[in-house]
Length: 271
Image 1 (tube, rainbow, N blue to C red):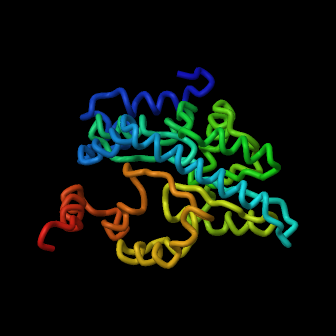
Image 2: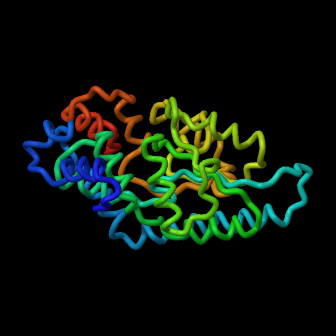
């Protein structure tokens, strides 16, 4: 553990090292049905296909950026690329694996403790692409729903991995609601946004936010020409609004109710 962060290290130790029965009291967590996530976490951590898709996404991003750099634009503003952080440039699958192993639900304290360990690894292809963008004079912005309490450690983690142009001005964390639209608009007022890169549809536009499963699919159909050109999507089956949509964004559902909704959402033979 990093001795310079004793408080957060202690929280993380309590959250991930105490017996399961003691966790609810010690770290404010609860036992939860997380075993269903093991396949998704294993896919992220072990599948060669995951790495291939990540490299593919950033290769496509480079092709699109190069195409834009060659084009003559009337808009004289400096170009910018906006990336999400978690599961887009930073890999947090170890945290997710720990929740599955301990049969625990996500909680803010253990998440903050994980962030402050500064141990997330880089998503394959991300550092190289963003370094290339920075060398070509493109401004890089990191728009994340990590909170202010996690900002300093997130900045340090990104810098440690070699991500470029990580500053207080370019790392835009969540300060109020979860929507990123305001922060995107803030960047867009000063720069020309060439690419938006993320693992969640909400990383691209507010039209996807708070929508049902079918509404999200319909919104994708409407915006389909932007995927692969303006929007670049990274794979993340571990968590996200795709799952929240199945639950109707109801955070009060029990594990049994969540499991029931997941089963009901399955499209089977004969449906």
